[in-house]
Image (cartoon, rainbow, N blue to C red; front, side, top):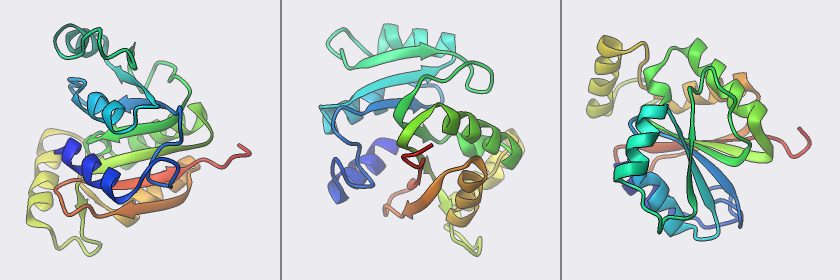
Length: 194
């Protein structure tokens, strides 16, 4: 699961490293059909951070009513369409299983919007199932890619392909980590001066 991936990442790094948010970071979580579970996990792992869940109004309303309670004071909601509505400024944007739904052009469009909204020195963290660089596997990821081609506009990609998308939107110092789980991570940075 995405939570397992982030847990493993948290164990491999910590706050202030390239793979962990700095103290007091404002994080925007963009997740399909969001339940708030990823936001809860992140605020538990990084208690100094606040998380804003950005999702369509109906999805955010459901998550607010059924999954996130008043005790989760560091979790907020921002309703909108990430292709049309303004994105709130943040230090870190997490996109969990989002880009595999879209064509390269739509991915660059979304990542460019995130780059513009991202605070200088901020980052975007992609949580996706990565194909081997030669496309030979893993088999599960190949099957996910076939599913994306049939049901959506997108596909699963390699780390190099995600690097190209992130660079096309302006992100630099792009790194990826294989987590040993189904989902891996790719991190892109926005320069301090931008």
